[in-house]
Amino acid sequence: MSSVSNAAGAPEAAATRRPRTDLLAPKQEIPRPAYLTASAITATTVIGLWCLLSYGDLVRSDFLPAPDVVAATGARMIADGSLLGHMATSVGVIFSGFFLASILAIPLGIMMGSFRLVEAVVEPITNFMRYLPVTALIPLLILWIGIGIEQKIAVIFLGTFFQQIILISDVSRRVPKDLIDSAYTLGATRKQAVLRVLLPATYPGVMDTLRVTMGWAWTYLVVAELVAAQSGLGYMILQAMRGLFTDVIFLGILTIGLLGLASDQALKALRNRLLPWARER
Amino acid sequence: MAKLLAESVSMVFGDPDAGGITALERISMTVPDGEFRVIVGPSGCGKSTFLRLVAGLDWPSAGRLALDGADIDGPSRERGMVFQSYTLFPWLTVRGNIEFGPKLKGTPAAERRGIVERYVHLTGLRGFEEAYPRQLSGGMMQRVAIARALANDPEILLMDEPFGALDSQTRALMQELLLEVWGEAGKTVLFITHDIDEAIFLGDRVSVMSARPGRIKEEIEVNLPRPRSPDVLTAPEFIDIKRRITALIREEARRAIETAPPAG
Ligand SMILES: Nc1ncnc2c1ncn2[C@@H]1O[C@H](COP(=O)(O)OP(=O)(O)OP(=O)(O)O)[C@@H](O)[C@H]1O
Ligand SMILES: [Mg+2]
Image (cartoon, rainbow over all chains, first blue to last red; front, side, top):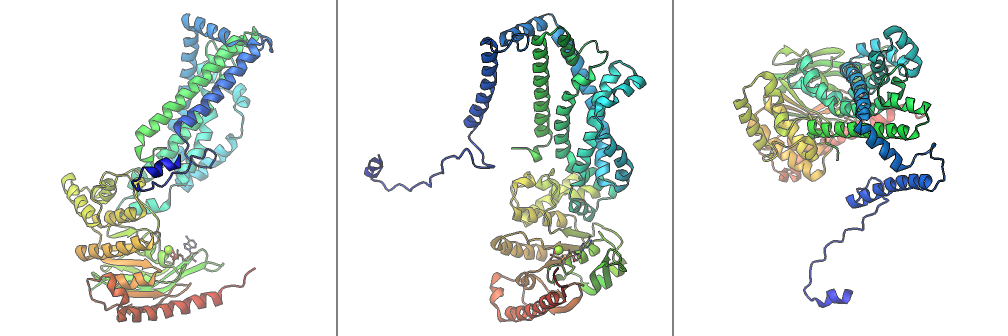
């Protein structure tokens, strides 16, 4: 083989040979096809295992419904509109709770991380609240604000708000002081330094925090719809449990997972769109 | 006339009675209008501390600092600063960074365009106006930082080891560029470094600081003709000055080691 290229004659400049892509080197990019293949293998393995266990009759069907049963249930519930109704309720609850938490936690967290006085005022509460399981507060929530939709929104709110404050204050704290000082030496007033430098410097971290806590908000959904719900994906799962409708439970779990994934991707796209200067590779 | 005046400026961090660190002790200095003044000194001797006091970012524990006869009380656009670390605003393009100061001042857009044009040209950044800092090399970022400070038209330019993080070739190019820009803009400059060659190549006068607590040990006049080219690095006068400064600094370094508390 090598003799062929020698015989070609012309002393071509030996292109420096790129080392073969090493798939196992830490922090090393790998080719996109390799990445997608690996992901596809995982996905097919999980689904394959599911098929094997259910179609192979290795697990009882009321424990593990077969994929086609879940798909059929899904089709039926989409057709009669009930799945969409549950989705709409849950998305409404999640977004309301998450939105309320975010618009309060973002300014408060930014101030807490950069103004020692605000930190002193807020910290005792946040440090206490962050360790409380939201479930422990549900009885009080029912007592105080009833069993309506507000109670469900409150669960999501409490589950995300305190975590957001802690994370965002950290983002704000890590903004280099030299950045603020640069603004001062360029003639910025204190207000301008805060609004035009501190604030934009926190944007990427704030967006990342929103992404992470949005994921957490979804994990509170079933807890939020535990009490006196009439609709919602969490409620749907809890109802199905009573009748041992595992196919509906599976459908609920899949839907929550997919919606969570979609909201995560949406926030990621939003971040890249709004903050091109801090784009993730 | 004295542009910058420092009279017995002292700076103590922490409680002076309970193990506070005396970073600066009775620093006095007069920098004439238009001079390129360099401060050299061993690491930790208080160079950055002094520059922050001049910038108005910190308050001296004692003493007086004045620019054009007016006491310094807080940061101001009159005293532009280029920091030791990279401090470009990452969410602004090169253009956005350079016009940050003029924009705060309310300079009209058309005029700002001209200012950006001028300093982009001066610092050799043509074609990078719309690039974000993360797309630039270290040397380019520091050039933008210099352009940003100059575009605000300060009375004095404070520079804290701006080329400290650059490799020696880039550094040499940046020094020449800075002298060009300085010659053109005619600003008073207070420049900090611990590189003796850099100090002599750039400065009209070099203030040598002692190890902690920082004092001004000696002021050395650099009477090398301008414009200076890298050839000057081998001129006998240059070598002579370098020998004197090196001796002063070595003395300080030894003193610092000898007075250091025993380990453990
Ligand atoms: N905010 C601070 N609090 C306490 N001590 C400080 C503070 N800033 C500086 N110091 C101390 O003051 C001394 C001088 O520090 P400074 O940063 O001015 O040194 P420097 O000459 O700029 O050093 P380098 O060349 O390494 O940048 C050091 O001993 C440092 O530990
Ligand atoms: Mg320093």
